[in-house]
Structures are given as C-alpha cells and as structure tokens.
Length: 127
Image 1 (tube, one colour):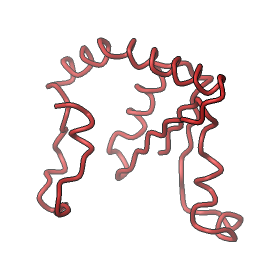
Image 2 (cartoon, rainbow, N blue to C red):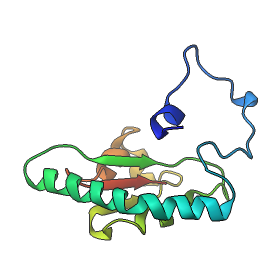
Image 3 (cartoon, rainbow, N blue to C red):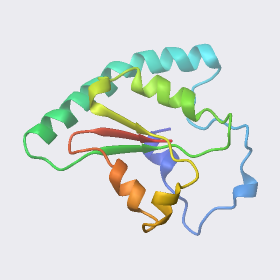
Image 4 (cartoon, rainbow, N blue to C red):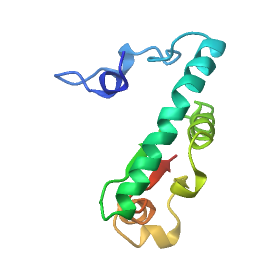
C-alpha cells in the first residue's frame, strides 16, 4: 500500500476505537524485513531531500513537515532517528513540542508552530 493511501482519511470520518493500537500499517513485516525495506528506499529519500533543497535555494517555497504524534514509547524518537539518519542533517529541523512555556502561552496557539516551520527547501520533523 502506498503511503498516500495510508495517510488518506476515509469518507465519513474514523472511529479510533476500531484501530488496534499494536498495528503497524504499511510496515512490510517483521523488524528485519522493515529494516531491509527502509535501506532500499533510503537513497530515494535522500535524493528527494536534495531536490527539495535545490528548489528552495532556487526561489521555491515548498518545504516538508513530518508530524509525529503518539503516546510515550510509541516510536516517535526511533522514527525521527531513522528518517533524519538517511538525509542531510543540515536540511533538517527537529522540534519537540512539550507543554507550552509561560512565554508560549502569552501568544496564540500556533505561534510556536509557526516559529518551528523549516525554511523553503527544508525538512521539519515535529515530534
């Protein structure tokens, strides 16, 4: 199944209770199979990041944000490590969002999000 299909919401909404929290949709199998699949696709990920960066340097406005949300121990940090380890770290901005600080609470809800958005051509990982 393509990633775009995994991320697309079904018509009519979803019922979170119907999802098995242990499921790993889109993963090709056990840990060894998943690692092998990731190693196979990593060069393409690095190439796409290079192209995104080149477009940004050339005046483009696109950027990519990988948004990870989950409970503690859900694998967010491992995903960040695997993805960021396959691309040029100079083009990656990693931001972890914790409980808002007093300074952040003095601003609107999206203020700290806007500050963390990567520049054109950049890859942002929001944890």
